[in-house]
Image (cartoon, rainbow, N blue to C red; front, side):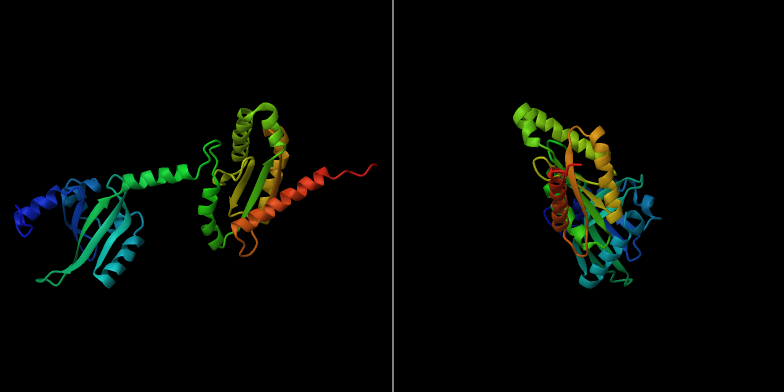
Length: 280
């Protein structure tokens, strides 16, 4: 029992591991596996998986092709992340470490591997990421979310627009009625904005009383329509008056550049509103 060369020691070792140990062939059929592997897939025996291949046990079969390319080139792969599909249709996230062997008798190419279930860890990471990208007061997204979303937007070819919103005279509300009322107004304006854009359009609190609405996949005309709708519904539905500016991304422009143009548009609107009107 003290020697890993002992077959009985190895058998007990593999049987008692909480990680999934398996052997597959080149076509992806499961030839053998330990109890932990079967439990990951919701199977009671290897026979439950006989008619399934590795491709059919993944949410994205293309990932197996990528892993196989690494195995063929290097002979081994380490901690390759996969999302598996259990027999009941639910999914789990695993790390696969495997190496390629050739059966000395048949010459068949086989793969020995071990799966580590990281589903709970991935769930916790998502929860922490969600908390890190949410404004704790309003529940809107925050600047960190904008920073994380920017690279994908900037590298993509699809259009997008942005609307910036600034509460009018917010400092006066805080000075006159206190910060509790100011906080309630921020929460309410965030809810107003979320209710008047698409579910997938992030509402972002970018500063104290400043918000932005990101409009992925939306071009110039559609961004203008959303901005006009917010201006039109604001007086009746918003908890407080606000000024907005908007911009649609121009060629190769960064998110910050587009936001800056939207801010300039907001400033232009404010200047025009304060300009004295000529007497009739």
